[in-house]
Image (cartoon, rainbow, N blue to C red; front, side):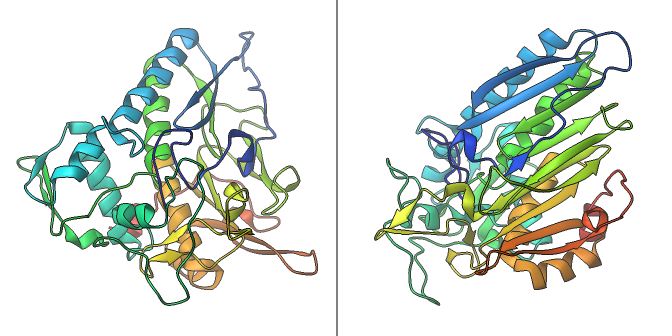
Length: 356
């Protein structure tokens, strides 16, 4: 769960065309005579596509793009002038007073770390640095042997002191840092969608390099039919899911299959508990009512792996799909909820109800 902006905002995301999510619904089906408007921009190291219909859509889309760019300046670890960079440089020595946006992002991320038992953890910044996930060429210097940690500083969401009254964060050890790579794109999607709604957009599909958020009336019986990419061959559609509202997030190791160490492809999604790359080598898709939740959940469930992840998801009523390409070429699927064959489509439930 690495993150930032330079050539790529997130080390765990990779190039624009490497998104795991293939969106089959490429047009909004207008309920009226107004044609949907589509715009795309390269932001946070990947391609953000906004399709919107409704009065004020052109202006709302531009404001949404501007909001994502503004959040990047706050949350990006790739930028030395970002607010999170200043936080990480000083919070080990003294409490750091955050802007409302940074404080909201940090407390939300830390909250999800607690809900997921640390399988999602924004304090992986020391691990990201020590594994070289933010190098100029995006190459790993190597992965520590099984059971060994590559941490260069303390990692653990419990080591961040939060003062809500004064809006400050304090790290309990030097070398600590927050990395929003595992949740920042979801935060940006929710912010962009809110601006679209306030701007008079009645229906929209937002596709942010592997994660989708939809609202309003879609082209497929009022919803959206979204394609799911093969966990290895990203150009191959391995299935689809029907979504009426909410967000679909996908996480997988093939997103940066170009990365190598010692001539070998290396996994890049991190297990914060073990201090090394996560062991699962497929992909996981999850649906949630908002993009922030879906983004965090996809990382946590990937780290858990299919056996632990499906049991955890079942106890919380989550819709989850694990895909893994076996050595014989067959595609193994493990799923629950709307991803099961024949399951009815429905708007996702709030996962926080069972997790709070």
